[in-house]
Length: 534
Picture 1 (cartoon, rainbow, N blue to C red):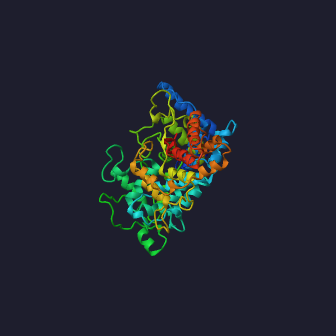
Picture 2: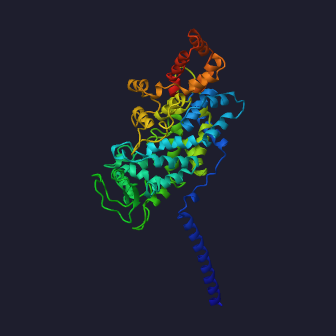
Picture 3: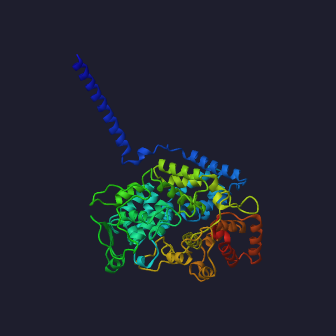
């Protein structure tokens, strides 16, 4: 009898242990899952709801500081701002007139959708990211960047998730002709160079100070730097200068093992790969390292990636990030609006790293659509976003705006970066290089000076007969209409009553001659309003 009871107990205990073992296995699988999305449960909210929450956070903070936000921008102000920020171009006279004359209640939201659907959206952001990904130095003077520009344009216009674009850049293999994404590694040949770039652009961290010693202002150690750099230790790149001379397409490959390198920094440490601020992954000796890094870096629960992206894109539209500088995010440099940064980062992940969603959300906020005219005599701190900061046009935007209003040769003005072998002189790229300021310059500072003014005065482009002027003279059935078309084509608005009186008196005194209208045209181009994004 005792034996039977004991046997039943043993079976019951065995069954219980079996159940516990299964439960334990399931828990272990969940905890060890390689799919980070299993740990992310934030629900994707409708865009309108996120927009409202963004504005509520900012307004609450401003109210606590007794700061009155600026009013809504005029349609003219918003139109030009949205065009420049989303497509890098100013609207044509026809586009400006159509928007300003529209009586649609939601015409601003409609305009944002039109600009996101425009091919110029992808070209604009590709133009900006080529300059971020490819350092302008002597090593890259013969590196062709057109393949990377074309590839990025396609990715942005197709709205490929940012996580996938970054993964493609980080894991790129093959020749530049086969895979334009390898241009990123070709442009950053040194082990320290690619490490610094990845940390800045995709993780929002300046790790370069930890290359030679422990970082003096953050918790990053020298071992953190070289353990992260180890993910790129197997990457082998072709010499771009040699490839250009030989007429071959340079390439990038990942070797099965770490190769001994020449010209390594003196501070180099041979350490096993380790995620930044994270774990040391278990890797096989012959396993490619970059895919492992890319999977961690773009994971939904990565502590840096989404926040760094949201912060950089916010800065693109406001001239200031939620954290400044945008590539120096750490606990001793906190955001002014931590709740806002968390909200946008979480929703960016929930919306599958959708960049168009992010742009749509930012540009539909009251914060973005506020006027640049502050309440009171002095503007509020620009990091509070109480009014829209006035931003100088970037060199690329300025060139494209000038080319549009003067009708400059479209072949010469094509958006083709001039770095690398080129059959002809690229006027656009030469202009951008000449007008580019210091790399770390404040995007809200106007840096142009006398050399730039002289260059414009003597440029064939700015001495051409303006296409906007020709169109205005052709379309205007009266002096008033001609003036309207000039203003619409150059400043994206119609003249005020005072401007109308002054300019019409000027041309009337000169018998409405073409020379008089030309003076008006060039006065508008040389105004501060033309070169600023308000």
